[in-house]
Length: 59
Image (cartoon, rainbow, N blue to C red; front, side, top):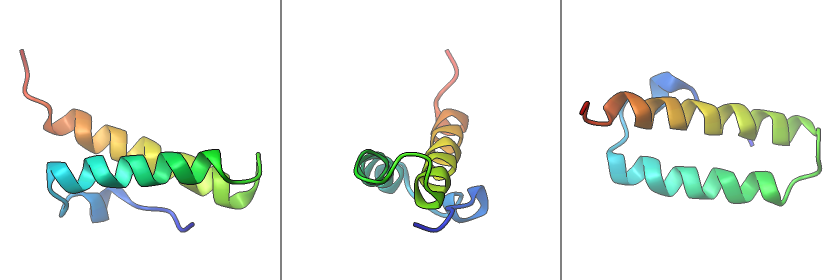
């Protein structure tokens, strides 16, 4: 899996981010621990979560 950047995520809708989050999470679970693919997927997941947090309405 390639790294998904925050720049790429800025163009996604909230629904697309949720779907992508699930896909990347499942990818992490099914990859070899500490592999380059898993490391990139974890960073991508982190980027997705940051983007989702930034879009969340403030209380």
